[in-house]
Image 1 (tube, rainbow, N blue to C red):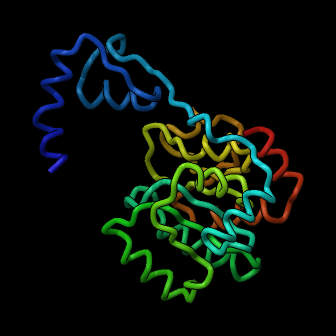
Image 2: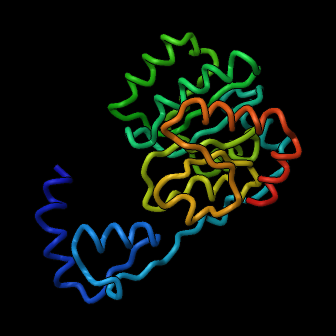
Amino acid sequence: GYLQIFREYVPKIVNISDAIITVSNFSKNDICSYFNIEEDKVFVTYLAPEEIYKPTDKDICFSVLKEKFNINYPFILYVGGFSLRKNLMRLIKAFSIVRQKYDIHLIIPGKLSRNFPDLYGLTNNLSLTNYIHFLSFVSNEDLLYLYNAAYLFVYPSLYEGFGLPPLEAMSCMCPAVVSNKTSLPEILQDSVLYIDPYCEEDIVEKIELLIQKPHLREYYSKKG
């Protein structure tokens, strides 16, 4: 598979390269340490969200979402795929606790992968099938409406080389609750509310903090 090809070919490619471009200092350190290469051979070039992601009239966003997906309720948004490092099982468990206190939904767009049956099973076991919505594939334009209409964005990833979705959310002035691990603090700095993604209680606490405190939501939407 991919890992086998990576282990076989990438070290050879790295050795014959004059320079390597990567997306964060965190990734640079990983690359230098894994391949045992000099730091001055690796150059960091940050990514940026596409220009489509910008603040958009919330009424327009909600009317499009109502028509396309029948979304007419306050929701927390997660964007970023289904691999295990994205930590969605823990997010769903944390959401089940938040949901006991607050009338809010969780929306998870994206192409479903082999991890999906576990996520769907957990959602079912926690009696959350009416409150967690797996939207499957959505276009960039639909994502724009979701980011703008979301009550808050949550990104509990355990490992990121960069982490683009929080920047997309921030570009739409959506306040974000984000993992404090790997590259994310380097990229997002003080513009999001950080969580320990291994601690379910912390995820719950920070989501509830943003739900309870409108001035904090406002603060982080402007910071973003």
